[in-house]
Image (spheres, one colour):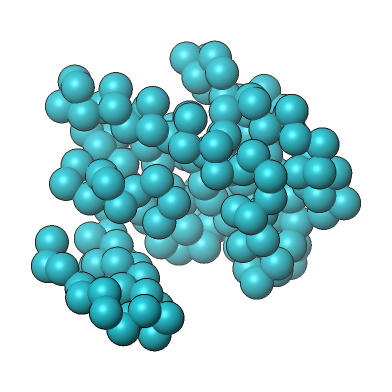
Length: 161
């Protein structure tokens, strides 16, 4: 849900697809507009991909972690994403989640994703993958997030959206 809670109202500009056949099969694909900004492959290898701002390269500890997980940081495959890079790495889902705690990762993710989402909002644009968006999966993620918050801080009340 990184970066998306503030953009639940423009679902369709971004889309979440589960168990796609793309690239030989993915567990999920998160698109912002036409860009796949996060996906995990369904294969023997647990390969994960994230598109973030290139400023992640300034964080040596994060670059080291990515390389230690058989990963790379390379130019974004999207020509219009001039400040973006694509990160790929191998890890179980439990270990893959650790990438979000690395220095600079949140900043790099928010820089690229927020800019892309703001552009889509301003243009009232839809993702070319909007018809495949899983509203039910997003609702479950939101519900899960509120449930986890309530376990740690019972004063927080879930809000309807």
